[in-house]
Length: 231
Image (cartoon, rainbow, N blue to C red; front, side, top):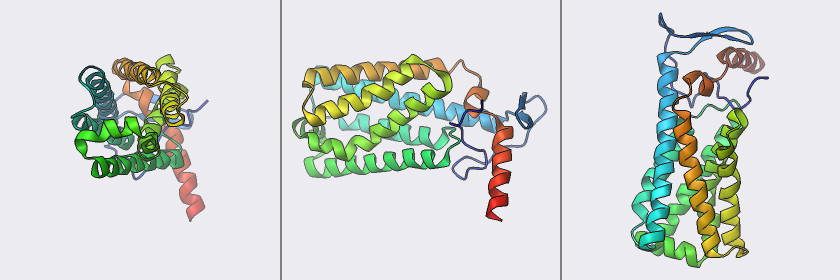
């Protein structure tokens, strides 16, 4: 069964593919053979590195929050948001509307972070968020995009740490927003999710690039169908 969570190489969000070169691995797809090119491998590496940067930034932010308090946490938000944005740039998701939706969530979340910084000041962002759960509505879309990546990774590879990321993020945010979970429990949920995300990222690097690229012959076929329908 073809994985529906892959982006077509013809997607305008994706970098232009490079021409196949001698020695590039050839795979047999549903609609014929296809080649994993150097451009594909660079794109996959960019996705994995970007997601790892976001994961490490989130883990560092939570560690500093726990041991040093809520001040001066904002620098960690830059690699967190930037890494996540780049990961969504290079992620392979066949369903274009889902890809656009995750990027829209990311943009909304970044806008919420900017609004929070302007309202509370960069140094008081975490304290304001901790005191007023309503700010979750503003920054929550950023973490919804991250949870979406976790769901994609679980759907494609059935990694248990991926489903942990998918479920723990909304549980922690909604628990804080509703007041049903104590702050200590919310912090533990975030810490567990951050650790699982780092594990997920590290386990991806030994995987072949083809695992993240998907069946390019199906992508080419569907792109032909879309062009025919548009014509």
